[in-house]
Amino acid sequence: MVKIAPSVLSANFAELKKDLDSIKACGADWVHYDVMDGHFVPNISFGYSILNDVAKVTDLYLDVHLMISHPRQYVEQFIKAGADLITFHIETMTNHETVHELIDYIHQQGKNVGISIKPATPVEDIIDYLDDIDLVLVMSVEPGFGGQSFQVDALKKIAKLKEMRNHHHYLIEVDGGINAQTGQACIEAGADVLVAGSYIFNATNRQAAVDSLK
Ligand code: DX5
Ligand code: ZN
Image 1 (cartoon, rainbow, N blue to C red):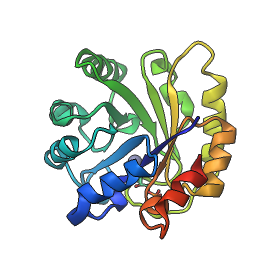
Image 2: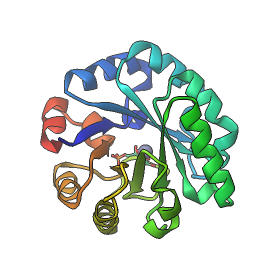
Image 3: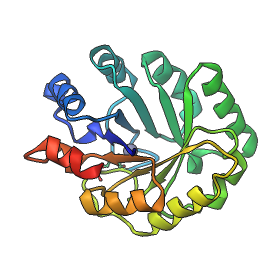
Image 4: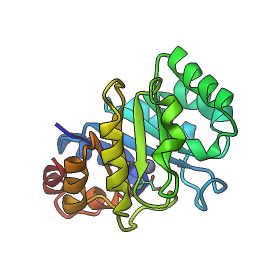
């Protein structure tokens, strides 16, 4: 069954524990934690010190999505703060060696590794790493903000990644503009994990919102 990863970017940070408890009670599987640096993306969100607090008050799996220009420089702090999965963007990396080094480093710390691709980045750009990673994060909006509309081209990438999975083990996660309709289309294309921010946190009935994604 598909996993649901609510993005706390849309949570109320003054009531974060309440929101974390609420998504757990609604049957969320993971917490999706969007880190933005105001450089790789034109927005700033939160960093590892808040993650450290989040980790203390929830036992949900912590899915950390790094939308930052220098992931290697900060990854240790996010792992120390309690990340279970670290996903970095391929667009931030300059060469194969540094990608492999970062993947190996995260695995050596006993954590899972994902690579994310922006809407304009083809799946082909990460083919060399598919053997070594635990997850591919397909962005279905331009990273930076919650509440944008789903870009349908993501479905083709999901289907392609599913087709290519034969001898790999990665999960396929999709992020951006997910609601009951787009979520269903992603599941049909082959997604294993759905990230949803505004659809869940702004819902008048969160339970119904989570249920509608499964
Ligand atoms: C966008 C973030 C998403 C965002 C999704 O840059 O990576 O995780 O919170 O928000 P919605 O579900 O509202 O599109
Ligand atoms: Zn995200």
